[in-house]
Image (cartoon, rainbow over all chains, first blue to last red; front, side, top):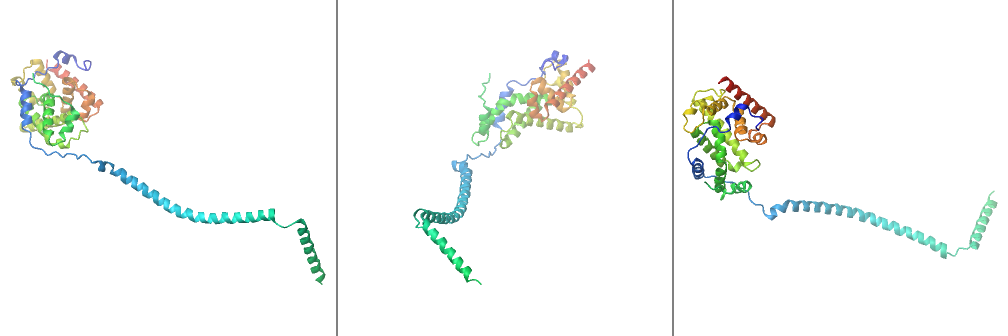
Length: 132
Length: 186
């Protein structure tokens, strides 16, 4: 601060030479405070607990609603495909089970196969002879 | 010696916004700021009685608009702004009353300085006041705040709504003009 002032000002100092009447500020403060007109202050109401948490409750309810709706829709969809899938699985299992049963417990032997082949050959030859 | 009331600004601001405590709180504000605002106003309007009137107007204006003060800025900044506006309004009214153009400087304020019963400065101090009165309004404000109050440029910037750089330039120009005034009036 000192450096930015001129030499003239440094010589003069900071007293402007003004003065005030004796006890001026104390008198002024008292008179001023006493002469203030009536004013109406708009007090900010302290928000209740419900008012403060209300936005969060509403938001939570909204998300819950969205979640519920999504679940209802996806549940209907997945139950339809589930039934279908269950039927397919069940059918698949039956075919496989029958095939296995046939393989494991079936009464088809090599002899039966040979007999079957012979009968087929005989049928074919009979058909051939019969043809002109 | 007058006893100072404990002053906690955040507590005062809170009390100012309640109907039952606002008057007492504003009394504390008056007590805390009256002297610093008075000197700021006095250096602008020069005459004690005028400074007294402008200070009263400042507090009345602050009080009647207290509901609009939400505590976003410092209370001191808000009060200084009101005081400066009131001072400028007062000077302009006085210019009109004395048939002086609003564009002219405020030299007319110091014409009877030596005759003022509330001025006890010597010739050099009176000369400095005359030099300051020749400055444009903004430079006068900046010079008074910086030279007499030693206010920080950042605080001045908030009050006057001017950049720190511009305020420094204003102060520098004011100093040069005062030096020139002293050189020309030796």
